[in-house]
Length: 81
Image (cartoon, rainbow, N blue to C red):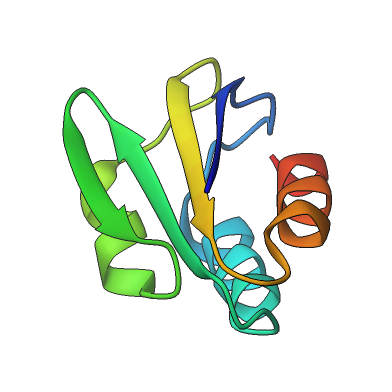
């Protein structure tokens, strides 16, 4: 399992279109992918879960990935944020 604290730098945060792109990319990996914000953890392969966190630009989140391709997933998904 790998975890990384990330500050979201996307201008619009992780809302609507950027969230959909993030979910599409996350589903390409076998690993389980979670995003945690303010103690609330959601499945990052769920658009509704991500939208429920209301992640704005500048927000501090934790990306948690567990599985056989976790390092590759971490690198790619971190770049999207």
